[in-house]
Amino acid sequence: MKHSGLIFIPDISGFTQFVNNVELKHSQHIIQELLEAILDSNEMELKVSEVEGDAILFYKLGKSPDLDITYKQVERMFQSFHQQLKNYESKRTCHCKACIAATHLSLKIITHYGEFKEYRIKDFLKLIGKDVIVAHQLLKNDIPDHEYWLITNQLSGGSPSGKFTPLIRWHHGSKWINEDKISFHFAQLDHLKSIEI
Image (cartoon, rainbow, N blue to C red; front, side, top):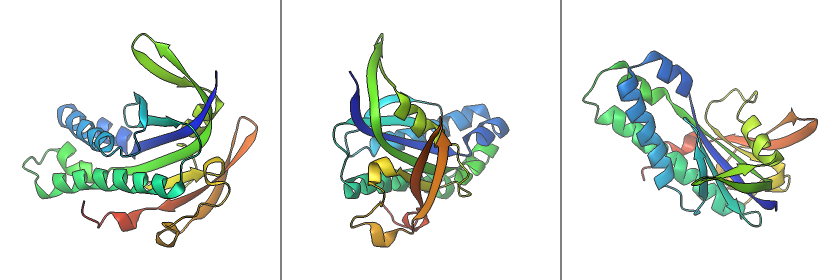
């Protein structure tokens, strides 16, 4: 049986270059801590379908969530991620390539609403469906920034608005995925970096 729900994917930008160019021992530790910071900041009680190396596939079944609540979740994860990066910068005791390069990592968050199905493989609950593919395909786009929140029209109703709106400058974009034009809005979140949590 298909369900409707939120698909929420925080993705660490710069991960591949970071892992390829630095010491594996420290890069693994840094990525682990960054992903844990994201997991620990899950205030919407999103379920985890899987950790995908440099991203986490979260989801929540049910009606489309209030955009102010979704923004607060995006804000919290973004701030937790950047607080962890600030800790690497200010409390650095190691000067290996991984520890120095960690501050160049960034975070993008893809949010989409659609239909999908849960299925079980042994102890793992996985997601399958066209909208899961759409959300993953949106990770690869032509947005020039590496750090942003992307919200599809299926989630926003075509125009993202809420109490958070004055804080954000939205840009419009779209992408063709499997013969469907997926329209979305995206915004930089740089203003959140300076806020201490």
